[in-house]
Structure formats: C-alpha cells, structure tokens
Amino acid sequence: MDIIKAPRGVRDVLPDESWKWAYVVETARKVADAFGYDEVHLPIFEHTELFSRGIGDSTDVVEKEMYTFKDRSGRSLTLRPELTASMVRCYLEHGMSKRVQPVKLWSVGPMFRYERPQKGRYRQFWQLDVEALGSGAPEVDLEIVTFAVYLFGTLGLSNLEVVVNSVGCPACRPVYREALKEYVGSNYDELCKTCQNRFERNPLRILDCKNEHCREIMKESPGMVGYLCDECSEHFQKVKEGMSLLGISYKEDKNLVRGLDYYTKTAFEVLSGELGAQNAVCGGGRYDNLAEAIGGPHVPGVGFAAGIERIVLTMEGQGCDFGRKPGIDVFVAIADDSARKAGLKLLYDIRRDKVSADMDYSGKSLSSQLKMASNKKAKLACILGSAEIQKGVVTVKDLASGLQEEVHQNSLMNHIKQYIVR
Ligand code: AMP
Image (cartoon, rainbow, N blue to C red; front, side):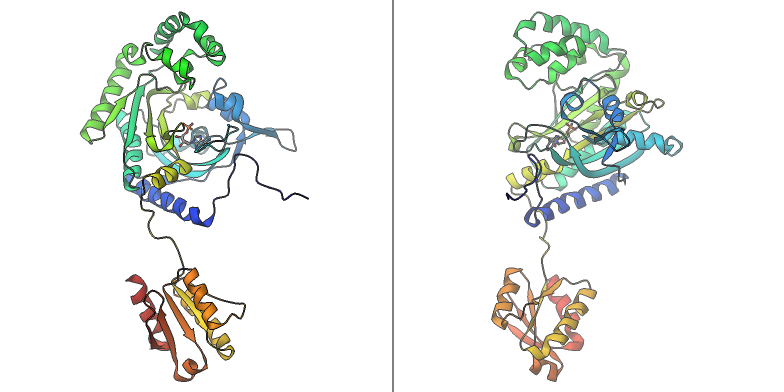
C-alpha cells in the first residue's frame, strides 16, 4: 500500500521553518500592540453566502477557488478563503458598533483557496489580517498602510514597494466604468476569454488580469483617479499626504483595483522583487460597503492581509535575521547508571526554572550523550555520576569550548542562568 501523502498545494511547516513563522507572528503581535489592535480568533469555516456576498460572486476566489461543502444537515459551508468578511461578520454579530470606533482587530491563521500551486502560492496558506472597522477617516487608511510598512521594516525587509490607488465609490465609479468600457470595447477582440466575460459583468476586473497581452492593452487605459468625486479625491489626497508626512515612499498604480462595488477609495499592495510572479507580500484597502453587502448597516472599514509564507520567503531571500532559533540550553548527561534517578530529578528542576533542558532516555554511553547534546545545539552539559552525587556537585561542561568545572548543586541554577544569558 502506498504511503498517504498530504494533498496537492498544502504543506507541512517543519521545525526548521516553524520557528521563523513564530518570529514573524510575535513581531506582528508587538506591532499590533504598538498600534492598539486586539487579537481575535475566528472560525475556519463560515456560511458560504458570507464569502459569495462579502467577497463578491464575480471574483476568481468565489467563482473558482472556494472549498465549499455541505455538512451533515445539508448546509453549505466554505473554508475561509480570506478574513475580511469574517471580521465584518464578527463586528456585526457582537454589536461592536457600540464600542469606541474604529474597532481595531487582528488575526492570524490558515486560509484555503483552490489555486494552481507554485512558489509562494498554496491551497492552504497563512494570512496575518489587520482590520479597522467603524471609521471612514483617511487617517485610518494611513494607519493600516503604516502598520504594514512598520511590520515589514521591523522584520528587516528592504526593497519593498508600496503601491496605491483609489477605486472611488458608487457615486463616481459608474462614470469611470463607462469610460473604461469604451476604451476596452475598442480592444475587445484582443482580450483573453476571461476578460471578454468580465467586460459586461465587471470591467474593472480587467485591470487586474494577469494575462500579458491584456496587461499590455490596459497600460494605456484611463485611470480611476481622473474620475474621482470630490470626496474620494480629497480622501486619496489626505492618505498620500499622510504617507509623505511619515516618510513612506509609494508609487501610484492606476491599474491596482479591488474590483467590486463594496471596495471603496484606497487600494494598496506591498510588492517584493524576491517573490517572482507572486510578488505581493500584502494587499489591502477600504471596503465601506461590505457590511451592507452581508446584510448589516453601513460600517466603513479598511484593512490588509499579508501571507506568512511570502513574508518568510522574502526574508529568507534577503538574508533577514529571525532572532534566535529556539534550542536546548542544557543537556543532562548521566555518567553511570547509579545517577539516573538524580539526573531525571535534575532535568525537571532545570525545566521548572524555565530553562530548556533535555536528556537521553535510551541508556547511551556518556560520549554518545555528549554527541546528542551537540546535535541538539545545547550550550551546556550537566554531567552527573556517582562521584558527583557523593560530593554534592554537578560537572558543568561548556559544549562550545569543551571547558568543564564542578559546580555545587546549590548554586547550579544561578550558574546555568548566568551562563545562558551570555
Ligand atoms: P489577497 O487576499 O488575495 O489580497 O492576498 C493577500 C495576501 O495573502 C497576498 O499578498 C499574499 O501574501 C497572500 N496570499 C494570497 N493567496 C495566497 C496563496 N494562494 N498562497 C500563499 N499566499 C497567498
């Protein structure tokens, strides 16, 4: 019988990588604290309508990429492909409009999309999601963009490009939509099949097409910015002024869209050259009409999502520091069998003091135990035999230099702690 393997497009995050993820998430937690965002844990699956209405029926995610299934009572459920719609649902369901606005939340966890797997694109991937709900102020858009930029800066990433655009609002977008259709209409025959389909349903999504030829055609298309109403234009201006004030360099890209009516005003991405075709480390923007789309009242919101795999890949590509890899500080080694019980006791005394420690349970020789200690990258070995027990000491060996000394059991923990902070 063949060994059962993991499904295509999903991956195990093994110990040589998981500590890097932990570093990214811990850093995000610190930035979230600094910006006043609280963590939430949201369900992995939701009612399918939340996503079909909250992300939009005519998006690739909803049309082609959702993992949707019926549960045993026949309800249609979907593994979450993103978090924004769930965040808005959570806000509405828990009456958060009564709290001080904006309500600022963040979360991290796995998302699921049936996409063609490639470097940086998986069917289960992790996103860090940051959302501010209940305020339409441009300062909040600025806060969201800055959160992303500070996070990536704190992680040591460089050469990232912040790209921004405004997608307007239902007041100004229809005029733009017509102008765009007029432009696209004269190139209709040259568009890919998908874009020809988009032409009537949602022409803005043609701007987003990854097909080289479509992109070439859309280079010369009119931009939304020229059609913004006064309110959207002023909002965009304030966000850009804010970025300049805070020293965030950015590029405007007239073709950056979130192609649905619920998305309004600011759209942005942070790009990295390190990632090849899947070059977006994070994407976000404002969605003032999303709460209404899922049956709620008007709740403006803005946020971003960043892929953990892509952050880690970019950091590795740039040789960034992930902090110290968690490892064993102390290895307890037994010199002869009579010390086994005392050794076991010592192991737990060290662990109780929150110092990481390990030992061998298989009865290896002392030299094999010391090899095992080096293998585990321990800093110190605490060697215990009948001679040490008689004298009330432990032989402490520095595994880097090979130097060793006898330390009295009473002062052992102090000795270890002084040593491992060095
Ligand atoms: P989106 O929700 O599509 O705007 O994506 C936001 C971020 O999530 C992207 O910038 C990526 O970092 C990450 N991401 C999206 N889709 C995938 C995927 N299939 N595999 C890995 N990361 C992804």
